[in-house]
Image (cartoon, rainbow, N blue to C red):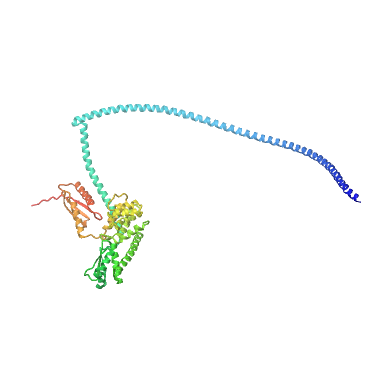
Length: 527
């Protein structure tokens, strides 16, 4: 039993192996048979595909050959047409060339004919020139003979006759030149005087400003003598404190109800007067209170100055000014010149300058800016050395004024420097108009008489002048010359000489007319 059990597994394994081998052989045989059939079918399919491809290739070949033959035929036809067109164009060019050759031949014939005519004309001109040269020689010979005969008849050589003739021509020309010069001068002066008078009168008529004047002494009303005593203080300590704080002189006299404030600086004078008014209204008067009130008034005055400057800038319509320049213009509201408020004068000159510039076709805005700033140096001329034109020009340059026209007008409106722009003489004219218009300025009797005496003295400097009299408040001077020692030409020369001396030696508003009179008086007595 156990032996059988031991043999059976071995046999079973062998049987399995034999079964696997037999199965594998059978599988191989089956695969070979299937593969053989597949290869046969594949070969048949390949042969069939090859035949089909060969047939299609043959058909494609025939089709391509037909298309190529059609294209070649079409291209041949196109080339034939192009060749025919080219031949036709060549024939046209040949015809045009033949026609151009005919035209050139005709032009050549014309040129040949023209050259022939020109040669004939040159020969004719040459012949005429020879004849003219011969005639010229004959004329020169005849002129020489005539000149010799004239010299024999007149008894003078050619040079002597020429000098005598030139002397006569020169004498006649000098007289005509003097007369023409005088006529031109009279016409020019008439036209210039008429035109300038129109511009000046129009400028004055278009501007009417108020006359504002402040004196160097300002009065402050005091309600009672008791308040006057309190302002003076014990042993004068209050009034000394006020003078020390403000830098002015306080004048207290027997005039009831009035205390005078005196100072050359109008700003300090205004500060002192307003501080005094506040102390009177407050009633508390002692040194500490005085200093406190004066400081408060100074701050208010600084703001008032800036406000006055801004108002003036707005009124004049000026843009782009530095705050320092505006402040300086505000200070001018407290300055006067010959009784004329300087800030109002600057506004007046600005407006007049614009009117004149517009009349002359120049820029009115530039002229207005020049006129507005021309006297700015008066705001600090009492603090610095030099004249106000130079001070004002340097001040404006230092504080951002770039315009050369404005700077030249500021520095040259009194002739201190040369005028390099047309706006400088415009400002000078407007400045003179503003100062000379009625009611603008005050002039003392002493200065008025001195100016008239100086005017008459200048007019009497010439030896030919017998009398000189100033008329119309110094606007005209009439000069009488000796008729026996002078001529009419001398009278005109004397008038111009006097006018030039007056311009160089005197300072005056507006213009002064110089009239020279020359007359001959003949007297006889009938008995």
